[in-house]
Length: 389
Image (cartoon, rainbow, N blue to C red; front, side, top):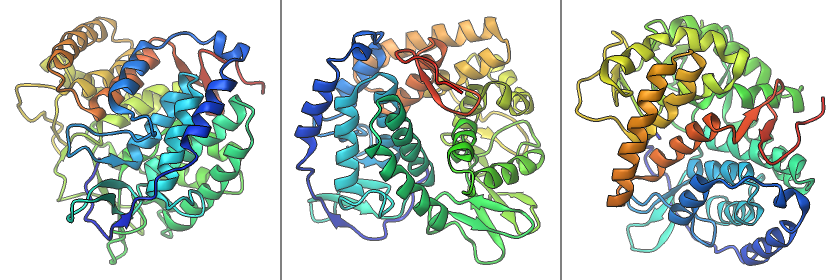
C-alpha cells in the first residue's frame, strides 16, 4: 500500500485472449470439482463490484486505479473460490497491462491508471515485491489444484525475476526482500523493508518448491530481526536495516497503519509456525480491546494508538484470525459484530473500498474455513481434497 513515484508510463495493450480464457475456464468448471464448490458470497460480491469482465481489479475509491497487489489478491480469491474463468481473466489483464504481455519475463508494474494526457496505462513500472510473490504463489497452486502445469512455467520465471531484482544480499544481516527493485536501497549500507511483504505460508511454500532459491534464507534473516522489529509488540509499516542486522525506525513512517495490519493477519494464518510472532504482537490485541476495534494508526516506538474516531472495516476483518489465534473469543465476537454493522453501512452507501474489502475477504474467509495453509504452505481451499505429503 506504499505510494512510489512514477518512473515512466507505458501504453495499455488489451488482452486479446481474455474471452477465450474465460470461456475455457467456464468449460472446465463443468467438472465434479466445481460441482463440489461451496458458495462464497463474499467473493462473488467482491468480484461483482471490483473485478471488471476483462479481469481488471479496480480500486474505486482512489482514482479507479489498479495495482499489482489488487491483481494478486484477485487471483488468490478466485483460486480459493474455484473461479477459474475469473482467475484466467485477471491473469491475462495483469500480464497484458502490467507486464507488457510478458509476465514472468518481466515483473509487473505496480500501478495502472489514468495518465496525465487522459489515456489509461501503466503509471509506474516499478514492481511491488509482495504482489509479485503472491502472483507466483497463486500460479503455482493453480497449477497443482487445477492440474494445469502451464501456470507453473510463468510462476517459476517470475520467481527468478524476484530473486534477481528484489532480493538483496546484505552481508551479516543476510538476504533481504526489498519492497521493489527501485527506491529501497538507501546507498549507505542500509535498506528499507516492509514486514507485511513477508507472509510466513508463502515463504514456507517457496522454500519447499524451490529449495535452491533464496526463500528459506530470506525468511530466516527476517526471523532473526523479529526482536528488534517488534520490540514494542507492534508491527511497523517500514523499518531500516543495516549490513550488521541493526534495525532502526523509519523516520518517514513513525506510525503503523495500512501496511502493518497485514502482519497480524499473516502471522495468524501461519498456524503453529506463526505462534511465536502472534505472541510477540499480543500488545496489539490490548489496543483493540481498549478501542473496541483495531486502531487505524499506532505509534510504533511507544506502542500507543493515535486517537481517532473510527477504524477501517478492513482492519477489523484482518484482525479476526489474529484474535482467534490468541484465543480472544469474546473480543473476536465483539469485533466481528462491529465489522458486520459497519460493513452493512458501507455497502448501503457504496463507500467501502477495494483494500478494506480485500482484507475482510482474507479475514472472514479464514474464519469461515474457506481456506487454510498446510505445514508446507500449500493452499487448502474448502473445495479441494487435502494435498498429499
